[in-house]
Image 1 (cartoon, each protein chain N blue to C red):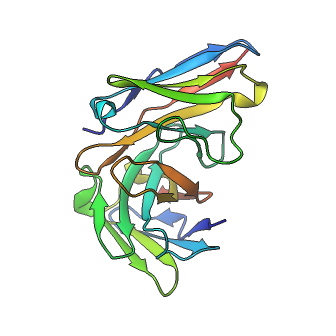
Image 2 (image 1 turned 45 degrees about the vertical axis):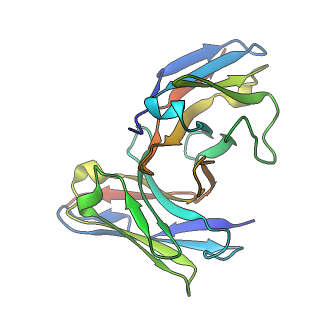
Length: 107
Length: 122
């Protein structure tokens, strides 16, 4: 199954570190990819594969995986990091799936 | 750098067929062995993957939408298209097209269109 579960909301103080998690059976086999989406905009790929960042993505964003869970960590959160974050993966059939999204508030 | 742009009617009547096209610019839709996906996002909700197509014509659809979805590709026009039949208000959403990665390890969708809003209403 490509079903992925995320906490609906997380908050972090400015400059602190926050971890956003994603759980699903498919993550035991396949990587989680992470996207940032701001209101009215398309998602942007932040992290893919084994903790890889596309060109232009700040290095304060990192990813990890353990068992059936994956995490996106923002080290030193900035005001501009306030957004919705989605994990995404595939299952053995080739289905793609997205987590329900986590709304990050930077205090 | 490739760019994607969705186009199509913004209003569709219930029970009719939603039709959208994604035009790829800055690169060929046949290069790189990518998949080309459609994703939607209902107002205030999360992302839902609809399906993808490869330039060879092979397709894969979300099982929950499979009976109503057709994705096609026109390599001569560098476009791929989505048709969703028998629409209801629940199909009202922003529809995105995206370049999707091939392969076993799956590296996500790295290029997205800006999205187009489709409202289902009489």
